Length: 270
Image (cartoon, rainbow, N blue to C red; front, side, top):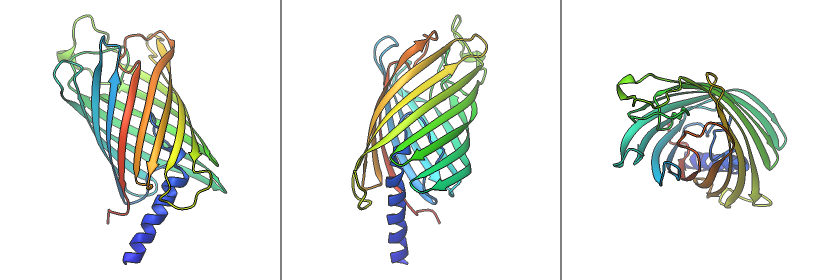
């Protein structure tokens, strides 16, 4: 039994290592984490345009139920309204409905959904369900792996819940938001994979956009990032997003860095 467990750990580590360039920093891929595994994340976001500097911390637990279904639970804490406090939470689920595998390449397609709550008293023209707004979101993700390069596209639609008791007079309150992204990841190191304990070094470039269908206001962010994976279980991300185009200036995630540490535990669910 012990040998089986060790073998499962090695295979899971090899799987994560081989496809690590799909572990995007600002978006999720269509691929899922290994079956019966648990991941723990701690993310810090810092924003420089509010005015001044504010930050948000996001603790997160991820569960891989099987090869097609995984879920995330998040909590949001920030000092955006003065004192650092718990501002809300979110549940996210992703179901992979298509897999096409080939030698050193594969294609994945998945559907995702999110429900979030936030007690923040203000609104911006953007709908951000990771701390700023209460609402629901659904969408699809398509990811293509081509040897060391991974490409992914996401299309989502979000609806914000109406919280008139927390609405500040004169603040904008969008109802719906269309989101879209195009992400790329490249495995820089190792040049040749030898064992699952080798460190990985990945570089990413993502384009993140949203459009308010009611007003036509939109924006497009560019987001370069770096990532290190140690022992196929520990992941460290560092990225920065900035607005490259658009007319939706009233938003929180503009000019934002993201720093994340993630720890994975394989084959722990019975």
